[in-house]
Length: 128
Image: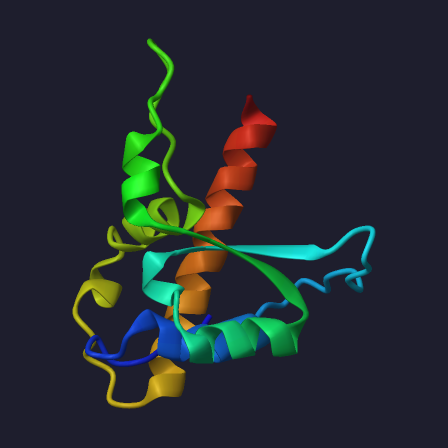
């Protein structure tokens, strides 16, 4: 997780976001490359350099191409994992408006909220 101001573009935080990933990924090989799916906002030279340095194969899809793709009739709309998680986090009142002056305090609060959300999710799955 990376915390920055609301006026910072996402593509400027790509390197820090990839570095902040906690899960160890397998080494990319020509037979099994590591893929990274991004939208049109990441289609620029500095972003491509960061992706190449990190060893990912970029898949950058233009927005119009996504809009052309039709959903099957009767299929549910899918939400991205990030959007879903942000919707869950918006229910935590302390995270809606940032009152903390220090970044590390706010980061700790976000991490605590994420842990609480996944604990509740795990509890629901065990109960079912």
